[in-house]
Image (tube, rainbow, N blue to C red; front, top):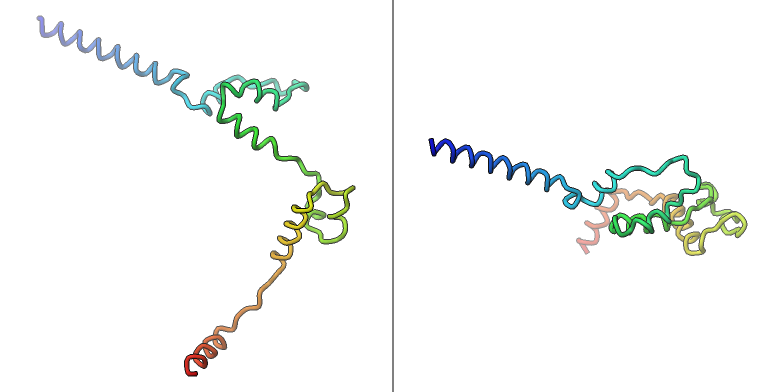
Length: 138
């Protein structure tokens, strides 16, 4: 009889510890920052006064890593330059009224356009091998 009671007590203790462990594992403290962020209620999409930068500033203490990522992503300036004019080498790219691109960005775009348009001369493999053989003979 005592053995049965001890087994029953051990079984109850084990069940209690399992339940406690599962509750702790499911607690907010053990969730990643992304999981906590996704579990939070969404802001009202119809709220025209919602400012994403203010929201991240106010919630940066709860989501420190995500707020750093948001700061980096949201800091990228929006460009209204059309892609045709951005990759155009005509005078419109350098026109201050039509482009907010920095001179360094204009230079990078022009260089990228030149690199993309450049088609290297294909090497004739037979001629190259003949040249190598000729040089080896000398």
